[in-house]
Image 1 (cartoon, rainbow, N blue to C red):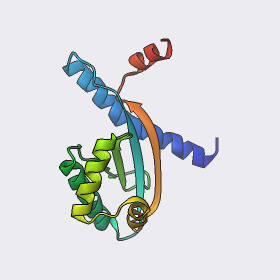
Image 2 (cartoon, rainbow, N blue to C red; image 1 turned 90 degrees about the vertical axis):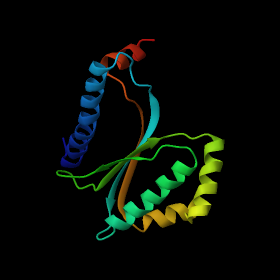
Image 3 (tube, one colour; image 1 turned 60 degrees about the vertical axis):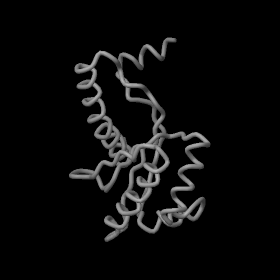
Image 4 (cartoon, rainbow, N blue to C red; image 1 turned 45 degrees about the horizontal axis):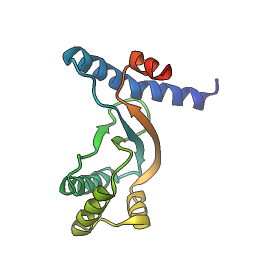
Length: 148
């Protein structure tokens, strides 16, 4: 196995492990399983010296979410290990109503729209990856889904 693929597998396992532990813990504490949703998992390596500005931008976007009646992004901050700085988890899909409300809030807050949004956020980013996921779930429940 090449080194790059090995690092990606290790990162994937490291990223999934806390979620699996939390899911197992919550399953033992509550009788009802958590509702599954499709989420975007975004991993950012920030340009040198831009971490605080990136966080301010994300906080502003979270304020727009709040004003639009949507939850803030789940933010994870790197502590040790791989080279990423921040991991963000947020719903993969929004409704047209949520998009309209977010756009209005973003305009009030001075957040760029459309392509300008991506130009603005990329000022802070050295490297970025994202993926779509479904969860949270358990291995046993996912196996049941496979055989429906």
